[in-house]
Structure formats: structure tokens, C-alpha cells
Image 1: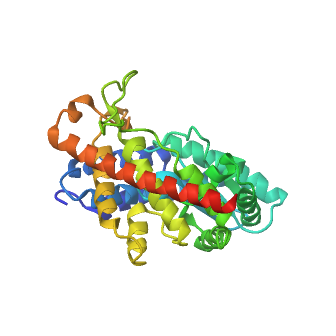
Image 2: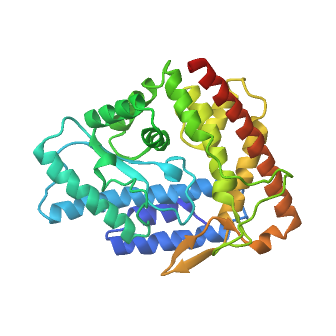
Image 3: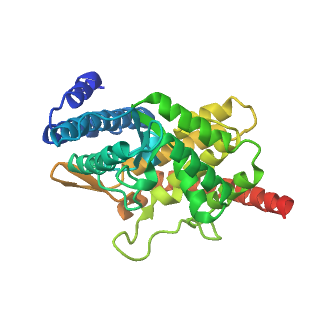
Length: 355
């Protein structure tokens, strides 16, 4: 990477002493990364972007602990783990991704822990917003009790979601499946992972419920195989690359990984693990298409506000007029449709067996 020193940039982030310094150093690192976009392979670029996000999150956790001491709460009363979900959990965040995170707290719940971590979760989410991460509209954040629990409470919650096979609890399970440890006690995150994957073993009804949620898909091609662009609104004439290509591929690979007990969280690592099973013959095409989706998504238009970026995840109308880009998009959509139809057939078969 010309003019880029990853270790220097990440060290700068990790030594920030205030939220203001952390925000400024994140912006500086982000600017350097933008210069490398389309210069190095997209998977490598996305990996470094997520190294930056991890460094910012770890520093934010340290700063938050210091703030808690200054506010009179003292040090953490027990071990805890700061975890991330969504694109952060998959190490696929863009430069403008928002928050998707939670906390795992050691031991049993008591008054002292609740008093500390209720305040810590809210304060940490606020701090992350201050350094440039918008709060999650779906409230998947450590400031929310649903995503901030002791390990015992987490195990009970996971078991409850796995027992109740309705749409919402299964949606929470799918979100949880992308969990990744970032800071604090790795042991707590590992125990959480054990509980999560143990609940799927031999549970065909749960696999089917996850598959039912997975096949929900935004139509992107009409019956003639033509790309469906946005007709109205701010993105009229454009194409939703996030929900048209990227998310369907994430969902399909995730489902296959859960089915085989694969614990990797990133889509490319999941594909590597699936490859080792020698059960699927189309994974290289999926891998290639997924990298195309990453590239198209990271090249969507964005705005800059106070040094931070705000993206739309929509390909612009002018990009769709580029014949090469349009051909790549259409080929990607044809693969997504083919895989989606295969999953629909699997779902119908599973539902017949269980009826």
C-alpha cells in the first residue's frame, strides 16, 4: 500500500486519549484508506477498513472505562466482553457503517453489576456515536438490555429464541449468528459461541425456521431477466446493491454455515470452511460474485459531513450506464436468483417433511 502504514495508523488510533482525538484519528485513517480503494484487492481493502473499526472500538471501550471511573463508578466489577454483530461481526463494514454491538457480562446478575453495566452500555454507545458511528435504527446496541446481559442471561435468551420459532426471535438468532469478539474477555465470547451452536445440533425445525427467514428476498430481476431499478424516491434510476446482491449472498452463505456448524463469522471465511467440506461445487462462483458485491457496494456514492462519510448503498444511475459494471451486476443477480430458488426448493421439501 503506497503511502500507507497500517501499523502506524492503527497505533495512532489505539493511543488516542480522548473521544475527540479518537474521532480525528479515525478520520485521518479513513482518508488514507479512501486513497487505496480500487488500488488493492477489494477483500484486502475491506479487511483493513475493519481493522480500523476494531481499533476504534477497542480504544472506545478503554476510554469508556476511564469515563466510568471519573463519574464515580469505579473499575468494572467483573470481566465482560464487547461483541459486534451485523457487518462488523462479519468484518465487512463499510467506512460509513453504524453500530451493531452488545455486551456479555461475567457471572450472575446482581445490583452492582446492573448499576455499572447499565450506565457503561449507554455511555459506550454514546461515545461510539461521538467518534462517528451512528446508532442502530434496530437498536442492536450495548445500550439496550436485549443485547447487554450476563452470560447466564444470554444463554437463557438464546434458548428462548431457539424454542420460539416465530419470525422475530429467529431474526434475532440470525443477527446473533454473526457475533464476533472485539474487546474484553475472549473466554466469555467463546462460551457464548458454544451455547449458540449447541442449540442447533440436531434441531431440524430450527434450521427450517432460519431457512424460512433466509429466503425472504427483494426482487431484483423481472421475469425476462431484466434488472429492476428504483423507480421513485431519492435513488430513482439507481440500484440497491446492498439488499439486491450483498445481503442475499451473506444470508445464503450464513445459512449453509449454520447448517454445518461453521463458526467463522465473515462470509469469505465461511466460504473457505464450506470449501473444505467438499459438498458444494459452486462456491468459487459465489466467492467471486461476493467480491464483486463488496466492490460495487464500496464504490456507491457517499457524502462527507464533518469529516465522516454517509453512504446510500445504491449504485448511481450513471454507473448503471457503464456496460462493464452493468454486466457484472446482472451476472451477480442471476447467480443470486439461482441460489435463492434452490433454497426455496429446500424450504418446501423441509416443510413437507415436518408437516
